[in-house]
Every structure is written in C-alpha cells, then in structure tokens.
Image (cartoon, rainbow, N blue to C red):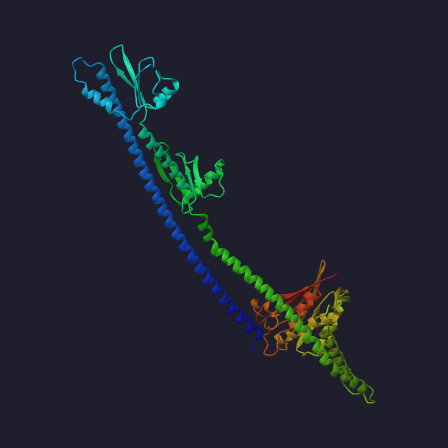
Length: 501
C-alpha cells in the first residue's frame, strides 16, 4: 500500500473533522451573537417607544401649561376690567361682584401704575417688593415678560397693569424644566447603553450626547458622519418641546453589539492562526525527527555494508592475483567501488557535506557512462551540455546520487524503454539542469507530492529517493529542484538550479 497516499487520506479525514468542529463552533457562536443582537434590538425598540411615549407625555404637559398660562391671562384681563369698573362706578352701583373678582386673585403678582410708572395698586408681590412706590427698570423687565394691559379710565386718564406668572405656576414650570433637562440626560445616558446624539431643529447643532467614547462636538465633519451613520440605521426621533423647540434624537446599536457581530470572524482568525502555528510546529518537529531517523538509518546502513564490502574487496584482490585471468573481475571491482561510494554517501547523511569547486559537466558524463553499462539498451541517453567546463561548488558523491536517482526513476517511468535527455545551460549567476524522460508522466497535483517522504507510484519502494534528492540539492547545495513540466503518456522534466559561485 502507498504509505504517502494512506497518510494523505488521514490528513484529509483530520482536516474534515477539524473543519466540522470549527464550523460547529462558529455556527453556535454566530447563533448566540444573533440572539444577543435580536435581544438588544428589541430593547432598543422598547427604549425608542418609551422615548416617544415620554416625549408625547411631555408635549401634553407643555400643552397643559400653555392652557394654564392662557387661563391666567384671561383672569388678569377679567381683573383689569373689574378694577376699571370699580374705579369708574356710579355712587349707587353695586360693586360686590367686582370686589369679589379682585379679592379672588391671591396668587398672580400684579402691579398697576400710572403713566409715570408710579404704583397705584399691587397685590401678591414678594416681601422684598411690597414697599416700592414706582417701577424700576429691573422690575419693569421682570413684569413685562407678558404684554401689559391698559386700563382706560377716561379719555385722558389710563393706568397700566403689569403681571407675571403666579408662584404656583412658576414652581410647576421649574419642575417641568427639570423634567425636560432630566429627559435629555436620561435619553443620552440610557440604561440600554445605546449611543445617542440629540440635535436642534437644524440637525447640525448637538445639544447633548451619550454612550460615545470619543466624540468631538466642534468637529462638524465628524458630527455629520456620526449622524449619517445613525440615521442610516434608525429613523431619528422628532420631539417638539415648547421651551426648547423641535429636537431630533439620533441613535444606533451599541458598540458591544457591533463588536459581537465581528466576533465569529475573529474566532475563525484565532482558530486559523492556532492551527497554522500548531501545524508548523508539528511539521518542524516531524522533520527534525525524520532527519534524525534518516541520519541514523543511513549511518547504520553504511556500517552494515562496510563489513561484507571489505571482505569482497579482499576476495577481488585474490582473484586478481590468480595466474589465469578471470573474465569480469574488472567490472566486479567497479561495482565494489560503487558500493564503497554508496557507503560513503550514507555515512555522510546527517553531517555537513564539504562542497568543492568541480566541473559539473564531467561529473554528469561520468555518471551517465556508469548508468549506460547497467541499463537496458532500449534506454537512450542524450546529453545537451556546453563543451567548456562549468565549475560549480559540489559534493560530487552526493550530486551523482541525485542524477542517478532521477535517471533510475525515469527508467522506471518509461518501463525500461525510452529516451532520457539531460540539458544544461547557464543564465547569469545560475546553472540550470533539466532531466527529461519519455515516460508515463504525472498529474499536476503530484508535482510537489513526489518529493514527500513515503510518496511512490511503484508497487515496491520506500518513496525516499526524491525526498533525499531534494534534501541534497536544497539543504546541502542551497539550490532548487522541482518538476518543471509533465504530460500524461508523454514524459516528465525535472529541473535543478544551482548557483555558479
């Protein structure tokens, strides 16, 4: 069974499980946020309705006070008429009705003066104003809030009646003003923490605001932006108060609700960051462990091969001493030398290799010559390389291993019959080496996977060849190796890029 495919399936299963868990968590969190948002919006609607009702109640109260003021005005006009009738009455006329009207005024402060502001009559004045003889400018301003009433006694004689609100009315009006002020305060600093801005009738001048952490009343652009945002979310509440005029209450959802709406996205981001960090740490630990295992396995393999290899070398020396020349001894010696090279390669895994300036052209030609004698005659090798030497920092033994591995994989992909083309060129500071075969090719999804440990398309094999090749090129030679292109049933091209210096 393909170990890499099995591991990949497990990764997919675990990824699906993780996505299900994340999806369920985000769904539940989003459900809670929606419930919280619905509850807050309900509270805001209740609050807005309460503001409307209270504003309506205050308007009714204002109307009541307007009616009381109008009634007081009528009482004063009746008083003025009774006072006039009393002064111009005939000697035998019954004055009880007029006297009763005048005596019934026990609350409205009244001052009656002649044309020279000399006081002729006063009633219900405060203690500090009861002994005055004439109207001063200060008193005149105080008693002309409402239009004075002229009392015509004759053609050339008249008196003027000045009055102001009754003490009871004034106290009740002060209570109403306090109610208006507290109304604005309570609207601005409401219990449901709704951000509020109260403006005048122009919707530009801010009267009061609340539940806004940063708010600059002097910055007209900022104020307009805030008002536009609130108006786009909720229709402003219009209130017309007698002493204040028309005002508008702008409001929107609380900052907490806005933050909660972005919480699921923040949760996804945090979970994603955690998974990425966990994956990177796990991958780093796994790679470190793999490196240690590979290094240990390679060194142990080199150690195990070393003993029989020494024995074989001794036997070859004995065969070479035989008087009769035995056919094949030279090739056997080459194979033993090859085994010695392989042992050397394995022993160097896990250690920092030594790179020496080498002619890469010669290295590739020697490697291909060795492979030709041990490959099927149906495999054709084509070399397209510069004639001049190309000096590159190399560990010759390990680099030859990479070339051999790519060629052997190409032979397997071609089922032992086809053409392997090796093309080399230089571009500025880099050397580019392409190894192309005419094998069965691979899908694009496998371009990166072929370098993973355990990945193999063969029925037999560990799937470590290309992984080790990538390690040799990338980690030891600071280069790159990748699948340049591949077409199903046409072939694959691997590319190696190395620095020239």
